[in-house]
Image (tube, rainbow, N blue to C red):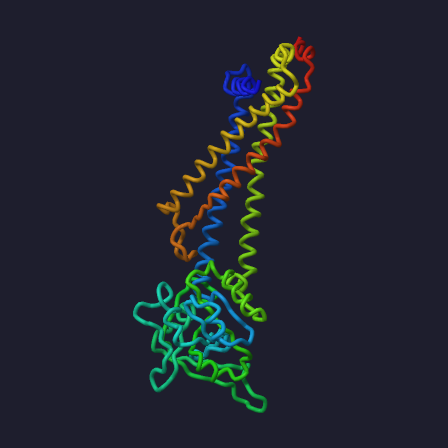
Amino acid sequence: MSQLNWYMARRYFFAKRSNRFISLVGGISVVGIAVGVIALIITMAILNGFEGEVTRRIANFIPHLVISSEVDIDSVRTALPNAISVYYSTERKAILNVLDDQMVLNIRAIDQEQWDYLLTGQYSDSTSRGRLTPTLYGLPGIVLGAAIADKYFLTVGDTVAVQSPLDARPGLFRIPQRHFVITGIFKSDIFDFDRSLAIIGYAEGRRMFKSAGKEHIHIQLYDFNSANEAKATIHTQLPHVEVKSWHDQHKTLFDAMRMEKWGSFIGLNLIIMIAVFNIVSSLMMLVLEKTGDIGIIRIMGATSTNIRKIFNYQGVIVAFLGVFLGMLVGSLLVLSQAYWGWIALPDDIYLIPVLPVEMYWEEVATVGVVAFAIVLLSIRYPSKKAANLLPLDAINYKR
């Protein structure tokens, strides 16, 4: 009997109908589901792409783990023997004086021995290693963000002054000030860093920031994705230590991106809901058109369950065609953009040359399952309506 149900469902769906409008509505339903699935897959891939770009840029520039508790640095190195670097650091707001202008900066003082790692690859100028050692006239070095350098037309070798109003002592009318020589300019392509961060040597920071408070221990890992595992390891071996991962430091940003992605997922499901209304309409009209056939089948021995399954299977065919077509086209579009980069982004607005996309197959499967489930829920009413028809009333319909 199950094969008969499938046979009747396929026959009703693919056979030529006397009312072409029903066929048109059914075709629109398939296209509507496919468009909704395509939109979901592309949107999720784009949001994943931007999130991935932001995550990599942030995680490759800031410390992967920050320990703010007082702890011996050797015990941290023992807990994480495979870390790239474990070093002291302190950060403070200060004022940068350039000619007659001033701006507030975040001054990060780090261990000189770790700077080679932090200023290599995409974040360094190939002509300048950005060393922080003393330079002309014994002045210490400083490395500025590209946006700061562009704003004041600064280049390597220029001299700037840094003031620390927070370290002014009572009774003194002079704000502590130190002159630095620019020894490097970094470009992280993260606006908040490029326009507001400067880096100096750790010893120079200790000398300048007299009331800087407790220091931090920064940890760089080979893989920033393992930060949570390293954090758990530190908590296991050093239970009283306060540790923040790179994700914790920017939790608000990542939570906002995650809410945006799933908000878009929920919103774009409305496209599928519109297609669902078309499916309900087409099945209801099909029930009316096939009322006489339903009565004959019932008299020949079919039960109401068989009738309900026939129309359920027809809804399954519509859902399968729409979801499969949408997943196929959507995945091909995303993969082609990832491979060839058809869509470019304007250089004067975005820091990324092409539209970034990242597709996760588990998300594609989730889109397909959700779309399929929505359609299956929608076909319950038309199939139930067909199953409740009485055989004699169905045969005498339109007579």
